[in-house]
Amino acid sequence: MRPFKAFRFLSCWYLLLLIAVPFPAFAQDKYPSRPIDFIVPWGPGGGSDQTARELGKLLEPELHVSVPIINTPGATGNVGMTKFLTSPADGYTICILAWDTYALLATNRPQWSVKDFVPLGIVIQLPSGFYVAGDRFANWQAVEQAARVRPLKVAISGFGSPDEITTNFLISKGLKLNAVPFAKPGERYSVLLGGHVDLLYSPAGNIKSFVDSKQMRPIIFFSKKRLSEFPAIPTSKELGYDITLPQRRAILVKAGTDPAKVALLSEAIRKAVATPQYKAFLKESVAVPDSYLPTKATETVMRSDLQNMERIVRATAKK
Image 1 (cartoon, rainbow, N blue to C red):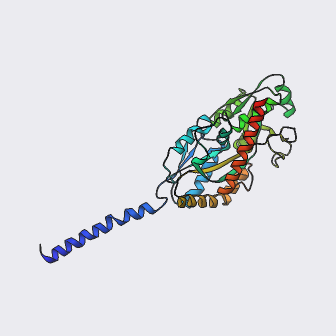
Image 2 (cartoon, rainbow, N blue to C red; image 1 turned 90 degrees about the vertical axis):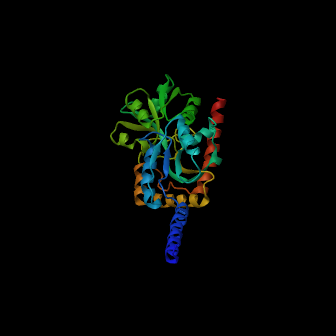
Image 3 (cartoon, helix red, strand yellow; image 1 turned 135 degrees about the horizontal axis):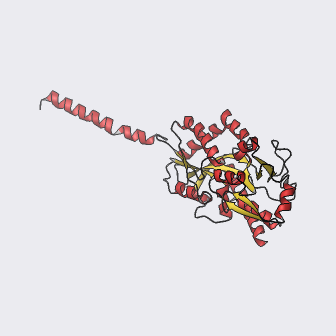
């Protein structure tokens, strides 16, 4: 081979090496470089789904990748949690944890624990209550009167949830209530509207459209003070029921994920919840305006809430 041809051959070969080797290495360092799956352990249409879809839209411009919603309902969120926790700890799967599912740690003792994930923050907090359809039951006193005579069916999200904890608490106070679980939010709403159950346990914002159209109305809120949006509706505290389990939803990433990726995701969430769009969503959802809590504050609230739920479960079990 002539010297010039040999030089040209070697130069081309070296150039190919430069192209083939460094660029994939750089691509691997970039995060995120592909879509991040956002698991919702509940069916479409419910509060967790609504929150995830709103947040997902706002995360996409921050992360510069798509954030597809993956609905995985079943077993009070356990099916979705299993899918989430069996995914790689690579930052490409996040999950929304509703307190419906978190409460299982105080009731049904699932196979997962708080050590299996890192909370990126609580993104929404809102009170829950009992709802009735149409003009059934004039007020809470009418519900109490009926529930001392015959069992009333209550549509809940699942066994072991705050829905069931609250229902069992009221049963321990002498009310005849029968909790009936429905994993799909749409089913819970339809059975109330169809007259198949008497009451629906739900966070305030989940069913706002039904309330606005006067198909449903709240009858009691399990909170310490009345909601400004519903000033005429009494709270559990003022009626003598010492139970106020708010609905909270946090975003999780799997434990063992690279801390740099966790920090990037946390910052993206912080920016997303600070947008006017998300603040408007919180208002529309009848949520606490300053719902967002970062990781450390979220961990503190989670510990406190779990202790409170365990206390209520123990007290209820004794009766």
